[in-house]
Length: 496
Ligand code: AHR
Image (spheres, rainbow, N blue to C red):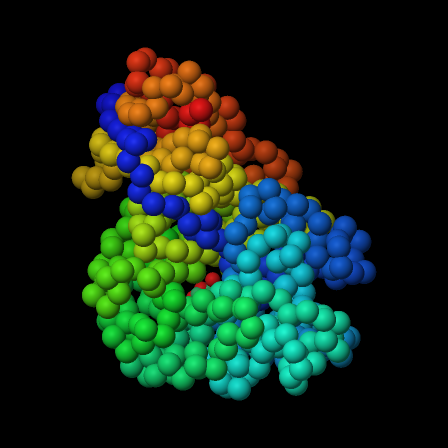
């Protein structure tokens, strides 16, 4: 067994890891909003004002900092006025993008804001540029945030909400290069400039405006948006999904990955580092002070849907492989925390790389959920300098690092080091030199998420197949901590 060498310099601080990196995304897609969150007040599933209690309790436990809604592609077809007022008279329509199912608009602005209150999370609303008007977007912001007499504020009050809501994050369209209008960057940049003008700050409410950014490695999109509109935006988005296969010809199954599929998944997860680096370099040209946040508001695994499920619902299982993908992304986001101010995994419940899966009244937590729970110690913590010399993980002549790691100090002074072993079949030893932590070295504990098969996942019959356990496999000598990570493992070691 080769040894990996890590040095943590606790005296060298590298800024704050924005808690919003641990953000989420929920779209009117498949069973995410309807069934995942919203079951209605008359449902036999225990709920509070229509929102299911089990899902809220589970999500509160991972401290969701921000929740993006209503899409995704749905956002550019969503007309917010259809989703307010008495529910029984709201428009029933077709969700044209996702499965052609009936959208009854029972979950609208008031319900979303209520959900955010229950979760104690910041709302992040994505407006409609693709098929909506400037007036519609402007009035939505007025409806939500104006405190005083105005047509929209009066209407909000008639609908039962006296005071405006606090709304910070607002996206001006989604994927405007694709489902959000198939635009060229030059055209969208002009529309962004126009639409954002009427996204007003009312009273004390200050909106953080997020421009629709690039897909994957479309660097020209970032260049044009920054050149034409950088002074008018607070954030610019980036979307990147980890797909082991081909998006159109077959993405690969969520379950039973071959060795090769596992390896490619890790390789493609690590690729986000290059994407962030290159998009950041372009942003640096126009914004060297890094005022504008990179907002990775869609990321995660995207596999073929589970056999027998609606192809438009994007329902997939979630295994230990997804847990590794999440861990690797977080470490990369931490490394870029001077530019990456928010990230939102797609999507919270029942869609793509979900935290939670439901089946009627049943609910299970996925391996990805457990990574969010273990890593919540990094939220708003001070990032510490770390040097990782990893040995290699090889398959068919290709090489990846087997270990990825990150360290931070929380507000109580505890240091948390998270570690991933990407290798699907070999355990690995990590020697961590703890510089500047001599006085705390006696107090070390750890947690581990691992599995013995690449396919390991939770089911409604066996909901606890994959869950965190205590990390026992470590020793300390002087200032050196040695951790043996099993194959396919995510761990968090706490010092102090
Ligand atoms: O998350 C699923 C879809 O992926 C979103 O609606 C869209 O923005 C992206 O293409």
